Image 1 (cartoon, rainbow, N blue to C red):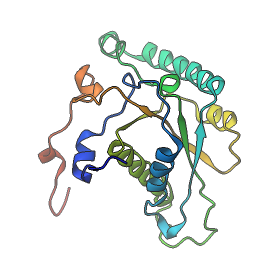
Image 2: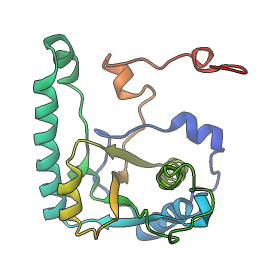
Image 3: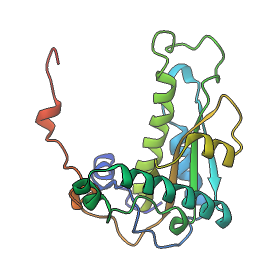
Length: 209
């Protein structure tokens, strides 16, 4: 870890969904394990820790998944009206091969058994727990000056079979992980005009919605 680790506020400010800025240099195992340790320390409903992390570095697997994602990207592009497609076309959506490392985050709804403290009335709290692990991972990576890119253009069944994930476990994210040449100052979707960030004032409500 760098001698002057950034504050959590600075890590949040710097965090970007990295796609085009991966340098190709593989993250050392020691650094990767620090990042995964941060993810594993996330809060979880009933202390179930329903996540697992599949580290993928085999170039054939990375290329195979990248080809699948490229097809899904094309299908999405073809579904867009012409004006939105012209905005979407230059946006790079993944750095699967370029990053050199993928982390597939999974969610096991059965972990902890049938009586999970805190999930009795809101079942999604289990899934929320796994997402909190991703957030921890992402912010720790920023502190290490490591880029993360969350890939969501894929068929869940395809990724489940590719990773040989047993039922009822689900893959909930493929994260591209790698060293970067830079972190963009402005998020890609804002830079390319896809969508701007909402002002905080529009998102804050008092007493009722």
